[in-house]
Length: 207
Length: 207
DNA sequence: GTCTATACAGAGATAGAC
DNA sequence: GTCTATCTCTGTATAGAC
Image (cartoon, rainbow over all chains, first blue to last red; front, side, top):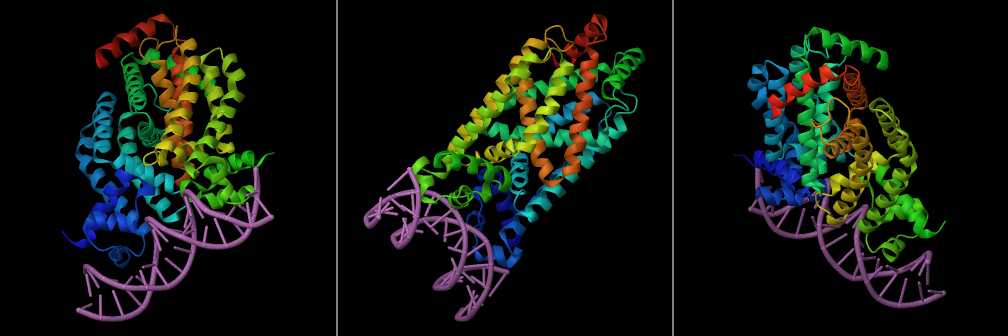
C-alpha cells in the first residue's frame, strides 16, 4: 500500500469517525502513520485530499452495489435493498462521511465539488432503478424518478446527522420510512381501479 | 438591545450563513459589533454561545407556528403547512443552522445537546398534529406519528445540506416529496375498502 | 460590562536536508 | 518521496485596566 493510498484511507476514516472539525493534516497523517508534510506533497491541501478520498469512497461503494441494483425487480425488492444498503453504508461510515462533506461544503468550494460528485453518483444509480420500476406502478407519472432518488439520498444524510444526536430517534424515523415504503409498494397490488382513483385525486391537488 | 442579545443574534446568523467552520469568537463578535472577549464573558465558550443561540432560534420559530399547527384539520392542510414552513425556515436560515449544529454534534457534546433539544422541539410539535390527524387515515396503525415526525424533520435537514451543493437537485427532491405526500393524502379519499386492502398487504410485508 | 493586550495551542503550508 | 524544522495565521481563552 503506497503512502498516497494510506492517506486516502486515513482521510476517509477520520472524516467518518471524527467529523470535519476533527480532521487536519496532522490528524490524518498520524492515522496513516506518515509525516504531516506528505499531505501537501501528494494532494496540495487538506481539502483536496478530502475530495479525493470522498470520490474514492463513493466510487468503491457504488460499484459494490452495481450487481444488486441490477437484480432488483420490484419496488418491494428495492425497498429491501435500500434498507440493506443504508445499514451497510452506515456501518462503513460512508453516510457519516457524506454528511460531513455536505456540511463543510457551505464554506469550502472544493468540498462542495466532492459533495456534488458523490450525490450525483448515488442518485443516478438509484434513478436508473426507479426509472425501470416505476412504469406500471401507481405513482407512475406522479413521481419523478430523479427527484425521488435525490429525496432518498438527501433524506439518508439528514437521518445520519440525526442519529448523531439521538440514535433511538433516528431509528424510529427509519422504521417509519420502511412502513411508508411498504404502503406505496402495497398500492401497486390494488390493481388499476385504485390506481386510477389515486391519480384523479392527486391531479386535483397538485395540478 | 443588550450585548448578550446581539451576540446571540450574530451567532445564529453566522452559523446559518457561514457554517460551523466559519464561526469563531472573533467572527461572531465582529458581526455583533462588539469585542471578542465578550463572548467568553457572557457565555463561557463559543460552543455554549452557539447552544444558547440555537435554543433561542428554535424556541422562537416553533412558537411562531403554534397557531397554524393548531388550525390544521387534514393531512392535505398539514402538507401545505409543511411546504410553507420549510420554505420560510429555509429563508430565515434556521434549517441551515440546524444542519450545521447537527454535523458539529459529532465531535462537540455541547452542540449535540443543542441539536437534540432543537430536534425534540420540532418533532414533538409535528407529532402532536400527526397524532391528531392520523386516526381515520389509511396509514393509521401502520405509521407511528413520532417516527414520522422525526423522519420529516431529519429529511429536511438532509435536503438543506443537499441544496448547499446542488440547489436545483434539492428542489426537485422537494417537489417529489410534495407529490408523494399528495398520493398519501389522496388515499384517504378512497374509502374504507381500499384502506383495508392496503393494510392487509402491508401487514404481510412488514409483519 | 467592556476594552486592550496577550498567552497559548493548533491549524495550513513551505523550505531544505536526506 | 520522505523527513525535520519552521513560518504564519487563526482560534480559544484569560488577565487586568478602565
